[in-house]
Length: 110
Image (spheres, rainbow, N blue to C red):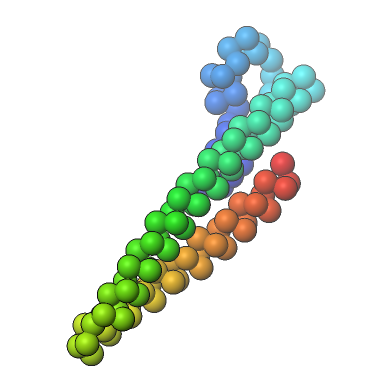
């Protein structure tokens, strides 16, 4: 779902029942909606960054544990499987880091 679809006019009306008679296309309605939209998106992006930070910490911990197992193992077949899992965790960390960067860029826009 795109970021502009996270907060709609219906959500605005639910949060602000006193604005029920206001049209969305009116200057008053557009201004009120934009203010509410910015406030919602800022909190949404902050929560998203928090969630991604926790996910990054957890993935790093799992990867470090796997690296410890990899160093302790003597069998080549087991090492190969562990290396594959470590590679998956590295890829996941790259994806999370890119997502964090994109989220920070979005925060600058709002």
